[in-house]
Image (cartoon, rainbow, N blue to C red):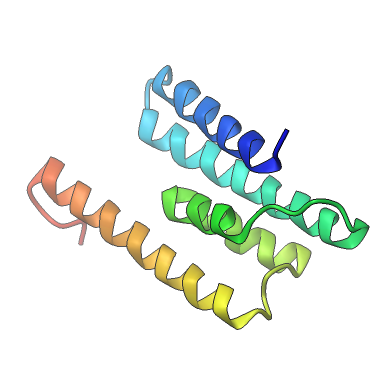
Length: 115
């Protein structure tokens, strides 16, 4: 089974679990960040052991879907994906995309800006 499929299956389970929470958005962010953190850690371990790696597109997508704080924490803790310039650029763009989406959603739901 492809590692990518496992990552997306776990993301789907996180989405389903968050829907059963009294605060689904907060639960989604918590689970997405925890899962992203674990996937970065697993990818770092795979890099050291020479195992099959998690594709960069998957790491970037998990960050863009709300897991970017977990990704930042994992990058610093595991010293993973901190030197590769193309990845860093795409990661920053994915964080900006996520923040823009969150701000837009906030404005759409509440009719005003956060600040």
